[in-house]
Image (cartoon, rainbow over all chains, first blue to last red; front, side, top):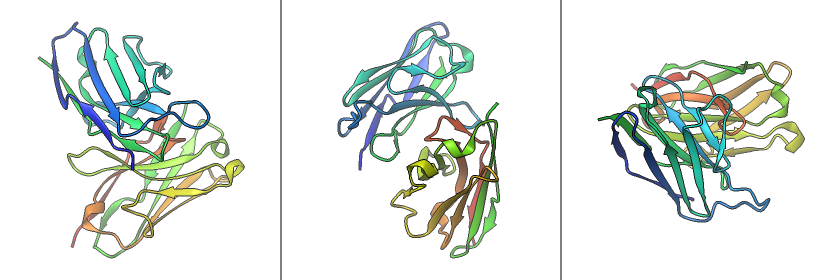
Length: 111
Length: 116
């Protein structure tokens, strides 16, 4: 099974400051079709998860451009350029190359 | 607008069965895979199962934790995906979410509690 490891697990951030979450996979997520199926989800308190990023760096419709994804192979990053109050929640990476596996989640809070 | 509405959750005793439904609207249901995920109380997200679209054979996959006990199915004529859960265990307790494709849009979830 592919293991996804996120860091940090807790991320206190000052409003307006940047934030970065790392996600590492136990094996390369490059699929046979050349795509890398790495997604990022946001789960606000009391809400269902919402996908923000797919295929490493493609933003879903309606996702603010302060969110960006990058990486390749086994190392991936979600960056928020300027954190806003509505960004509070838990962020998960998920690989979709070998079935579906989530990271443990990173709790973002306002300092 | 894509909408996914789960139903069928509730309190059930260990060893019993439950069937969840996911009613979809706002997209051409038959053109997409459908997935089920779950979240135990206070815990992270876990993939449960998915079913591919008919054009890809309608084949199914399961997480090891539910394989042999859960069965996913779909009725494209009604735009509904199902999750039949048998031999339920206390560790199956949680909120169950259905999602379009492999997670691009999620429902609000339905709570399943397995307890005696």
